Amino acid sequence: MRRVFGAAAVIVLACLVLAAGCTSPQPQAGYVTVRSVDISIPDGQPPSNVTGVVVVPYLDAVYAEVDEVDLQVSVKEAGTDIVVTETVLPIGNLTPGKTAREEVGLTLENGRRYDIWVTVWQDGRMRESGSVNVFLPDRTVAGQRLAYSLLTVSAIDVMTPDLDADPIALDIITSIANSGSSSGNLAMEVRVVNLQTGITAVRETRPLGVVGAGTTEKQVRVTVPNGYDYQISIRLIEGGAAFATSTGRITLAPPPQVVLADGSVLDSAKSTSPAFFPVPTSTPAPPSSAQVGQFRVQSGGAPTPMQSPGFAVALAAAGLIGAGLLRRRR
Image (cartoon, rainbow, N blue to C red; front, side, top):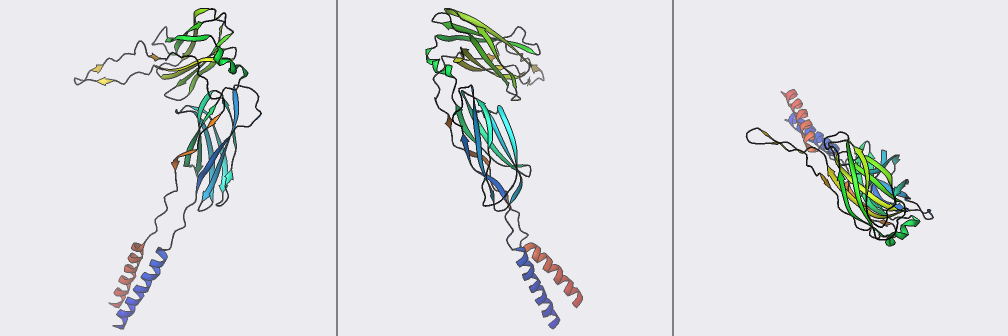
């Protein structure tokens, strides 16, 4: 009997020791987070069609030191996935209790609205991402004369001589009405973005010459790969000042095949009028100063903590010890 009680006592002590070891708290894994983001626009920049912008993120390490941290700053056209520019900056290690301040300089075109995305990566994994909305006004001296333009756009058409050609030529035809005398020198800024890839296929400025009194048609031809959908943005300029803008889409991607009940494939040829292009009115007066929204976190959070072994391992080990002692007693 004494041997039996001795074996039982050993088993109980072993369970207590193992359970105490298994239930000790596990250290919380450290991770990186974005405390806030400031957008700085330095004063004293001369009149220009671009503006220098400084993105200032503040990064914190939570719970423990973290290493292999990278900072990614991406600028996209507001409300889209079209990337204007992108920068990746290696940060290295971050220590808890010490907020890291970083600066990323950007040069962005005026007269547009952007979403500036700030993303932090830890050990090659995306940890947190958020964005802030920014509008940059036109800062050209000529831009102050927008309200006095006597030019209007009455129609915009997009045509092609061959819808099946690859690459395909697109003719952007603009009807411009002049209610005054002869205009100044006109130009058209054209930007064509592939909506499937997000890549800018065309970005250039074409001279249009002058427009006399009455209505005149001006044509600009661009060439892009066929079989994709495109967003076309145009900006009409007189003497350096924009007087009209418009953005439209053209559908060139083949439609999905439709298989009928009898197994035949529905003939869905390309539309003969795949373009949708709204007619612009005179450019409304944009805000005269830059607008910066609030930084909002879109995704992120603390990593999932590791689970401790618990009592199951302790009981399993105790059972093995008990089995060994009983075998000896027999």
